[in-house]
Amino acid sequence: MNYIIAIRTLFQSNSLKLSERSQILDGEFDFAVESLPSYEQIKELILSFPQRDDIAISLINENDDVFYLSSQRLSSQDEYSAFKADCEYSERVSGKVSINKNIQNDIISIYDFSSFAQELCDLSLDGILTTFSALLSESSHLTFEVFDIEVLMKTKTMLFSSSPQKVVFETFDRKQRLNICSETTHFYDQMRYQLLPDDFQLEIDFEGNPLSEIFDKLSNIFSLIYLSSSASLNRGILELHIAGQRTLEYQCRCNSIASNPELYSFVFLSQQNLRRYIQYHLSFFFRQKLQGNCHFITAIWNPCSGLHSHLF
Image (cartoon, rainbow, N blue to C red; front, side):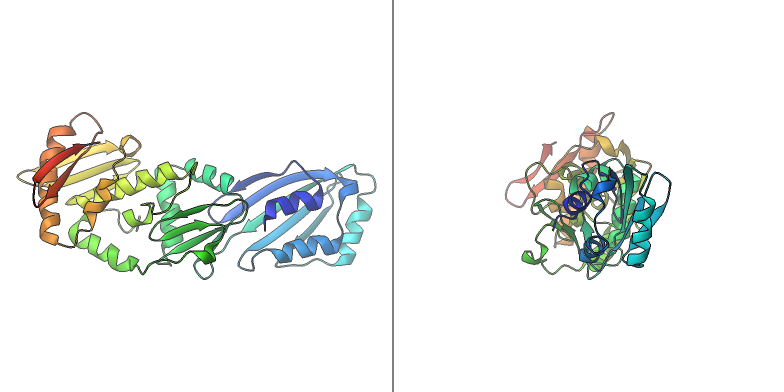
């Protein structure tokens, strides 16, 4: 069900302005007083929302009289009738909708995907990472149920879908993966950002996805972190320490990191000695190619052909 269209249709309003963040949606609209729906229609709309979410609708006439109805407090028919009587000398009514989105059974709602994506992309890097850290803190995987458009986007730990029942997550122990990462790399900010490359490496995507670029960048950032001996992330600056023949320290701005889908495949190699071999040779490529720019070199090792470099 497209709840945004349902609100516009019920109040016959074309002026609904939305702001949807990870766990809150706020909307404002106005409509002609003649378009006031019945009490039962408003009540039915509110009760149609997912039970995991808390919905509230406020109506304000030109005399600043207010009628408030929510899933937590269903005002009476008499209260609404009194409000309608107070609207006798009003021409327009202003409305506000507020939704507190709660996670239940590893599912959270998205009512307006475009607004959600825009709000997310407008955040600072710290804001984005803090948002996803909080959302994933209690779950090994999380499903975003999208109500307004058809989407399908999936990583190992997150699914964005308008038909989530049709997609099944593979078994993935996120907590164990974090523990493995902490054993091989000392990430100074891991307690603050308990995130993995797996959280953002896209397995399924769709054309025109406004989140593809940012997910790709975050996958690259965390791949670089967990390919390093130690790393820190502060105010959009990524600092990497690579242990090789010499210890190399390098800083770069996260928004300048170029894309390389091969990075992710190196992070969780099952043969730890091979991973250490790659980590060892990263120091050479970082030293040769990273001075003064933000281009990265990955070390690619093939048992048959040996080590070679790939610029991205």
